Length: 207
Image 1 (tube, helix red, strand yellow):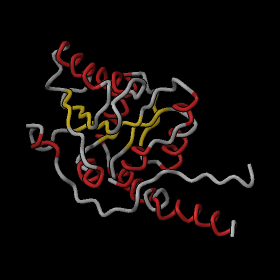
Image 2 (image 1 turned 180 degrees about the vertical axis):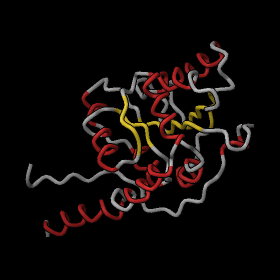
Image 3 (image 1 turned 180 degrees about the horizontal axis):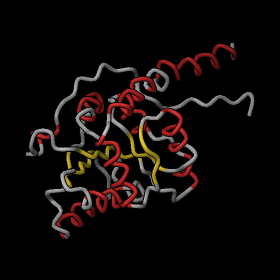
């Protein structure tokens, strides 16, 4: 409500120079990569993504980050003999992150709608993917889903449906350029230079 001002936590405009995750992970050149980056916790959509990548013959899921849930996920991957399909990497220093992000073909932003906070969230990774020109798989929620649909940077999916995740991944991989072009447009809107002007305007009015 007026006079409230929403300031989104978006990345600074960055000239991204892609760094390829594939040789770091021992993967063949051109291997399609599905990427999750960020805090490794429950309800971040990682388990459904693991289920989805089993349905995708050539795609490898890369989980970049750290968090208390990483050990449990690594144990699950080992138990299911999915080490060839799911790789863990990082954590990566923040100033390097987007350059590694850019090597992905699809970025996961399928936060599970498990709480009001998660239902309304606009996580950093959504805008980081845009900045790195990585097409997004986004939750069908009022925050993430609206931005993905309005910008065209990816596909909106049920965050816990592995088949929906797999199908949307196939769709993006079949013709990624429209999504990448949408990312290039969207990052001109969703960056800290734009968002910071809102904050500076508020400070100016307080004088």
